Image 1 (cartoon, rainbow, N blue to C red):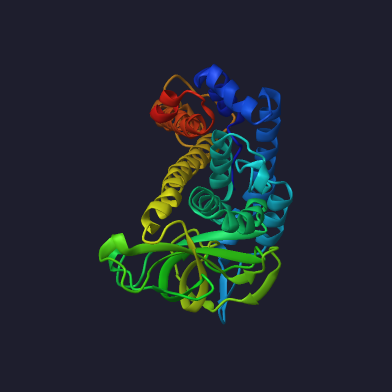
Image 2 (tube, helix red, strand yellow):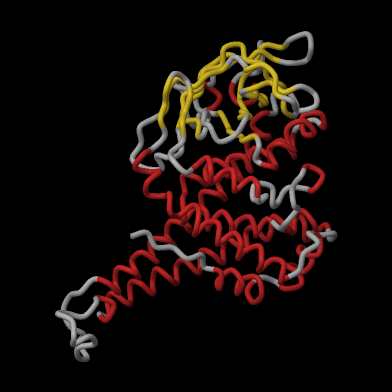
Length: 385
């Protein structure tokens, strides 16, 4: 049996009693919401995760994604769940309003990410990578690229990926071979192969926007010659209307031990059309914006898994019968007492709970610093955050 209830009491405690109240008030005021609005948002997020994502978690992992001739079909229930996710505006909760987002605090987004990770981590990878792509484009791209891509990414109509690794190189990105050849119209032709691309192909969104690291002809050696390019699966016109399919494809999806409802793809780019993000040869700077967001997300995923593990263990400890309490039988009508009566079991459960609460406090404080750096008027406080 799957067990999960969002730790709303913990979230509300952190906001009201743990985080600096004057700072959270400043951030909430910047977002045009108050404490009651925030509690309502968290309640609705919990409802979505518990009622829509959790019920399809186990079945979707068992079913996995299905690959067929370059296309990836997500498990039963994912299309409906993602449609509801998009329609309720969850993708863009922390994105600026001018791009279609709600401009809510980043720490709210972290709470949402934890709930999604606990309820269905595979599902969370689709919007999670999109959020990181939004961040990289917003902070690095030209206004033309931001105006074209961010509104659709912010609503979740389009999803995003990051393409770093290649068959011959992993963390040593200076060895990448993917090439970007400049064209007369300002675009580039992207040619190369990327591996381990999370959500590189799927059927949840009408378009997938790939952020691809590549080198240009005669670029400097190593990572100093890397640039970032936005490469859409389907090329939009200036108004965002979808046009022709780009020259890229998914050749296979990896077989994995877990998170099977999220496809890990091998992507081939065969003179695909792409556009430079930021400055030439400054791709690592832009990509690390995305990577920093991904690192925070991975920490939240770990917490999400730990929380649902604790809740499952607690449920099991109340159900599993073994032995009798040292202080006397607690359930004499049963053949044995549930193991929750044993002191060592309780000790370990309390340890799990305490660690989760401590990590949640650390993550919420870290997320708050992202908000402070964004809205604080005091230069020193911004830099310190």
